[in-house]
Image (tube, rainbow, N blue to C red; front, top):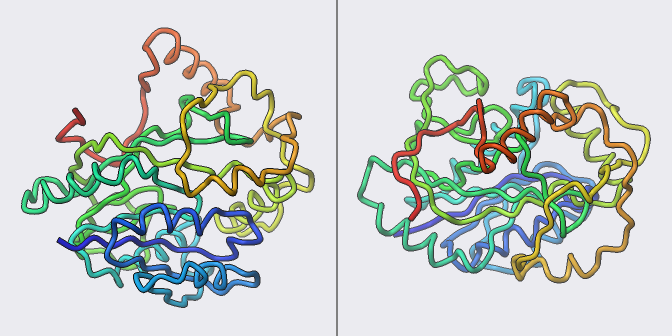
Length: 304
């Protein structure tokens, strides 16, 4: 059995993505790690090369925002990296996602157990979305609590929308990453492992810069924020008291900014009144179970 890791990235150093930690978090359990590296103006390439592993395959790419609009360039770049993988199973991590070493054996065992079971097309991970710092996380209605991060290496499986998930698209035209017609959800097994998502843990000025960059990729408009990002009152959030992946130790220790607890941007979905009401109901009446949520997958085997 061969397992490939894959990702895409661009300008991760200047935008404070933990790309090195992300790669290193699963490097011990993959046979290769494919990185689709977009044209960058910072130290991203040097940082990745400094990992100095024979498993790494860096492939240069160019992002075509004119052809791949509304965030779909992320899906196209994900697909490009996927197309260069040789494993039977493919582990996908975005540049701000990290796996804990405690889940390594669980991942290997699941991939081996279902290698010859075609009913399982992928594996579902739990998600922990850290917010502002490494001690608080979001878990309200608008935050996805599970997503596909391992898939079979099949040509009909493609990245979906802005690369949040994957779908089977047998007759894919190579461009329409948001078209539901002709696609179907993958049949997956819950893995019981967790993706640690650090995409909202950055110095406030860089957080605003990242928001503007994502906004440009999704809308073509260059600026959404001209002020330092605010995370709001962290006291209202869940507190994380367990261990982080060991590869994150130095980055966590190096945190040298004060979390701006000023007003959060109004455009954040969890700030909408409907999301706040649903989050309250889910937490207090349904034990945290998500209501009316959309899933990009079909669970056919639950974790034990």
